[in-house]
Amino acid sequence: MSANPARPVAIKIDQGTKARLKRLADARQRTSHWLMREAITQYVDREEKREAFRQDTLKAWEAYRATGLHVTTDEADAWLTQLEEGKDIDPPACHS
Image (tube, rainbow, N blue to C red; front, side, top):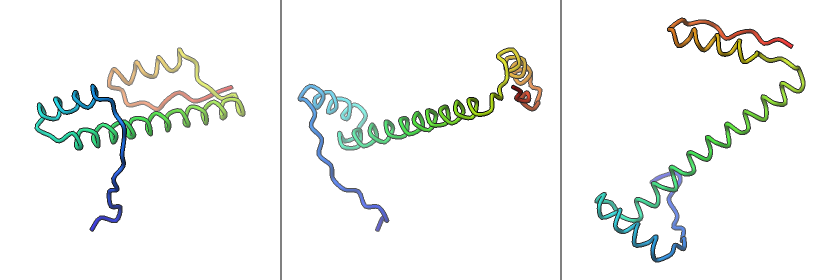
């Protein structure tokens, strides 16, 4: 038995969406239920990553505001260019 058993959840969708879902499920040889679970899982995964990125951005902004440490666009571009050329170099040092 799974440690986290699945529990049923009801959602309301309009008839048009329900028909579209049924057609797609038939075409994919899957159930409508499978497609809905897959869609929800993919959405939650994507939005969790988006939120983690947003939180990292806020932390970076606060760190910059507190210290003033940064690299310039030119420094970052030069570093990225070298990486693209296959050179494995460290990123430029931050400065104020």
